[in-house]
Image (cartoon, rainbow over all chains, first blue to last red; front, side):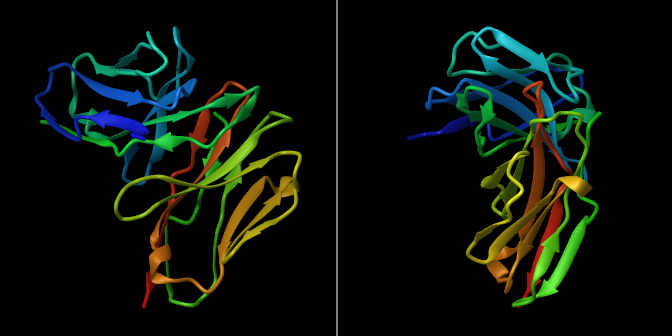
Amino acid sequence: NAGVTQTPKFQVLKTGQSMTLQCAQDMNHEYMSWYRQDPGMGLRLIHYSVGAGITDQGEVPNGYNVSRSTTEDFPLRLLSAAPSQTSVYFCASSPTADSTPQPQHFGDGTRLSIL
Amino acid sequence: AQKVTQAQTEISVVEKEDVTLDCVYETRDTTYYLFWYKQPPSGELVFLIRRNSFDEQNEISGRYSWNFQKSTSSFNFTITASQVVDSAVYFCARYSSASKIIFGSGTRLSIRP
């Protein structure tokens, strides 16, 4: 059982480049989310999705786009990378049971450096 | 924004000491959920506990215990007889009615042998 799979694990980009961080889960979870982790800032929510075709903004959405065309996949796109987006990115998923939030399953993270 | 505050940035104790990690949250919701997660040095995030706003009973799981007090908007985490393996960053998080799960900034706990 793979759980939540993030690719790549490491990436170095130049300022202005674009890229997509991939996230896939095989648990048929409805809820998926992206966080970034920076020293002293904890985990900050970028975007989240409560199901296929539905996405919404979190705390720090600027500079990032998401889409959810399938239940399994929730890619995060950096449109024009900036040094301020250097961070560790975590994808997470959880099932939903009515309105009771379930514990999230996290991927192993993607370490992204923008030069 | 309705924040989750973990005022203790870093804590260092000697093994076998008890240690309490503080979490204070803000919310305008009547119904909400609180979580604690652990991030060991290996980097993965591990779920520890979930608590809903209607259940103020304290919970104990082995050496871990949680004290939820709505009157002070706090959900504190105590490790009894700490061990080196407890060294990690611990995050408190809150689920809001808008389906957002907001994390605190984390407390880095170091247990010295």
